[in-house]
Length: 80
Image (cartoon, rainbow, N blue to C red; front, side, top):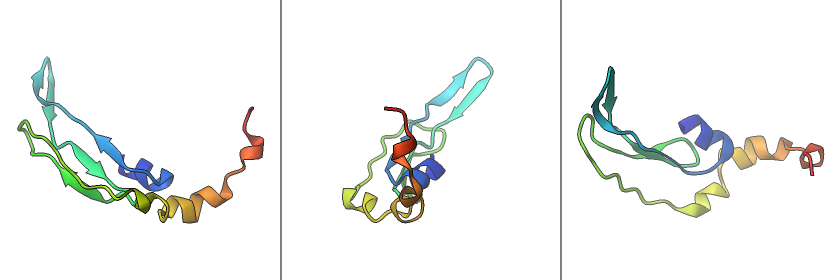
């Protein structure tokens, strides 16, 4: 999720459940990360939690994705 945020220049959120189900353990630790891949907020480990994070949407304009990746896009090659 952090790499996707960095490469695409947007905020991402990962929600994970907590507890056991069949042979799986879910640890929680949901998180929010900014367009630079930085984790802005993280939920508790192995406990129910609500995660809050402030997001400044203007950060997407100045993201690494816009500077490094987006300039190399070639939309003329995309299907109509």
